[in-house]
Image 1: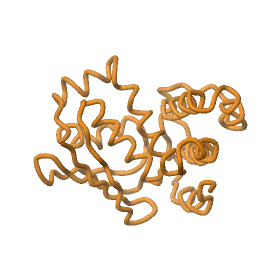
Image 2: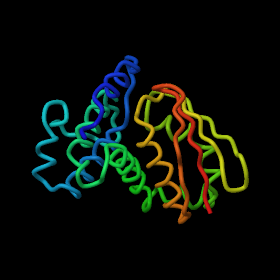
Image 3: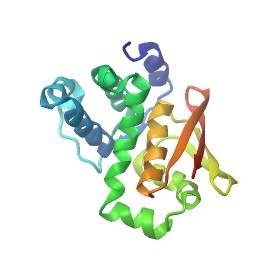
Image 4: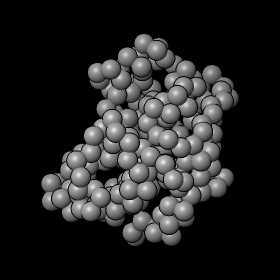
Length: 193
């Protein structure tokens, strides 16, 4: 079943002028598409606004990102099982780039492998990557917490992937489950072993 286009339209309507995301989110999705479906699928995706060269450190309209990941959901759904699984894979893949290089410094030195420290820095991290939304983390127990996101219109499954990917980079097994409050307001329950 193709990705829900009514949901996409609702998310697009929640965007404000100036809502942007780093090009690295586009380039990691391009890489995932090529890895999972080959160069011809990537060429099919890279048309219109997506045909341009994306600089990973430059900001681009989040509306283009949303439209892209819904197209990617249609391209990869048969292989991954559902649009939500595709969104989750896109989010997780975007964080795997931090498994080496300077990102490793953040995960291993600054947070010392502590998920609570990492997630408490979520707003700082998102501020460097996107121009919209607010995030707040609350510790619930030694191995769980909740991340509250307001003003973020990207599908919750994408952020579940980011959160689970973050745990994997810390070499910790865990889960992140979204509880949507509104189209742009979600609470993410995070727990780990």
